Image 1 (tube, rainbow, N blue to C red):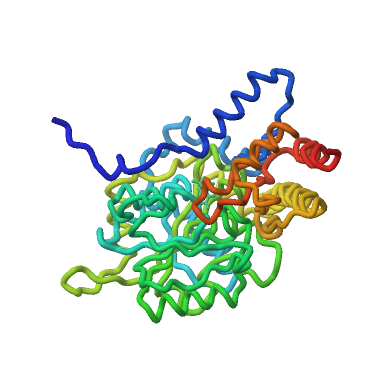
Image 2 (tube, rainbow, N blue to C red; image 1 turned 90 degrees about the vertical axis):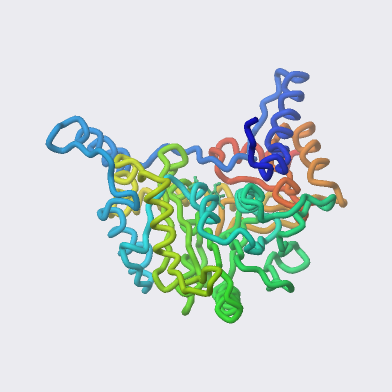
Length: 408
Ligand code: PLP
């Protein structure tokens, strides 16, 4: 008999996106003439920027010649990219990160999902709620989550609700977690944490021996001066935090696949005998065993984003999406709806009107306006009664969608 990992069987199916697809499919079939606008996607719509394209073309040319061919690269990434990261993403912000603290990957989803490999089986996990589902589901797979309760919460996970009531700023946990996932700027709420707030979390983690798993996949969208781009801008964070970054939303690399994780050498844990163990070494061991490196081509493309032209092109693309976000935010607020996000992140999180559930609001938008968004409840129990609009559609589609809402 083939014995499977029972933990996987605990996971409900991907209810959210399959249900979205089912409802949109049924509507299209009944109304074949309807021009549906999709604003639920987390994928980008602009093509790659010219600097990255040129660098990747050049990389392919290198691979065509025997004398410049590259086979397996270093599992943790090429130095040309790690140097650019250390200098631009950290050095320019006054943070010193060494090259062997940077691990290049094929995108942040892999590492935010895989990081649990180096944590003890009985680590207690905390998540903000609503949340990027990968953090919860991978801990279910690892057997850390307990059982799914009727409330939609997993019995062993500590949930930190974020809602209009607390201004989407999570409170420190009442129970003691071993690791906390923080995603700022946040998907799905589009909110960010101020320097003061983030400092509170770092200090809590230092005092209570808690690991912070800080996902800053959307840091490039930060527009205000009071929101840290990296958790390492907060003093002491290198002792308690791992940071995940991605080029997906920054530079349209959702299909190219490249990102990185920073595991500082100061970060230490203990084994069951109480011996001090460096997390950097553990993660290196994990990566060199289970991962053979991101492709040379994508790493060359990522490195080109740090050139003067690359930086300018990335900034233009981000402005394009953030102009969409501004338009969405203004439109929904103009309708009298309560909404957050859209300032430091490409998502606008809207409170549904008149106590409607997330799915009732989804149906209303689809049926009356032919607009598809994402029901907030799909991101966790505290997402019920909310709805996510993505700013990653084209300008035309975003304008059209907002016009539809305004006109009716
Ligand atoms: N982290 C967050 C919060 C995300 O929203 C996403 C993608 O939507 C990812 C990570 C994954 O990004 P990547 O494409 O780098 O795997």
